[in-house]
Image 1: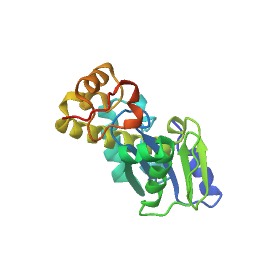
Image 2: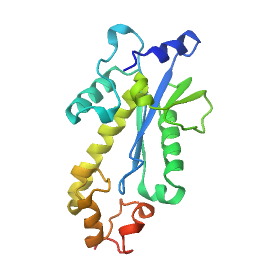
Image 3: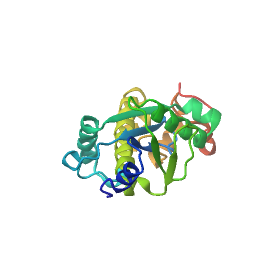
Length: 206
């Protein structure tokens, strides 16, 4: 993982609050898309070891790092956009909206925003997209961890309300068990209707 190299390069250019932004949940059939924004301290003595793309870390490691990031970050925010909005404006626009909200919710205003992937946000501050940024840029990796832990926790809570779909195991993704449950039971209120057309008969959960 990058050792805050890019963030420090921007500091040398006069940017003092560089925020990394990432999302989790673009692909699932159910649940929100979740985005986080993080401004990390750049001093070596408070650098958080072990930050990486959240998908490369175990659940336990992600949860430990998420707590450390929350304690150490100069600022962080986590936002979500629900399934209904995803259906209305599509997942790409919902992700852009979620990232914008995360940036604008930071208690310390960012003066440079680094986003994962190839995403342009409707924000007033300078921004840069970095492909595989969650594995290359420390603040983006931190954002990916916060978003992943938040969303997985949320989906476990939804699993208690809608136990037939196995959300505690699949986090809303289209596993065979999840798809079969949709075919047998219909969908629930957190399903994305535009994502389940191929195996949903139009019925809602009774």
